[in-house]
Length: 126
Image (tube, one colour):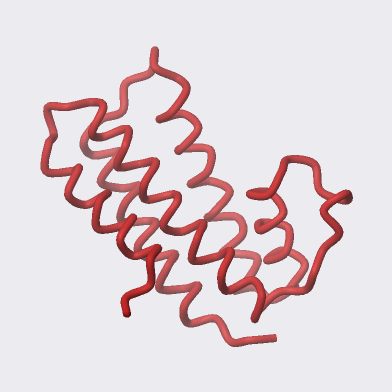
């Protein structure tokens, strides 16, 4: 069975096929982030140390990012920082409606998420 997070990425790619719809482009950015987040969250159990939720300011998404930082390897830290950047782009797409999200930006966000998922899947367990 296919990993469920990949279905989020498939939806993001299909939304890019509607370049005249800014709502579709915003949704593509959001779905791409969630594909990467769910992949990272699932792999954190195998690849990252536990962190006390109370030590993290920012909720469950930031907790996952902190776990990759705490893993300490350059690869894990890179995953954390890219995921944090994608999260910021998702927040912009979902909440900053006064700012345009272009087709090229949304395409870049989907491509970055796909590359990040490949990095996460290749990460060796701790």
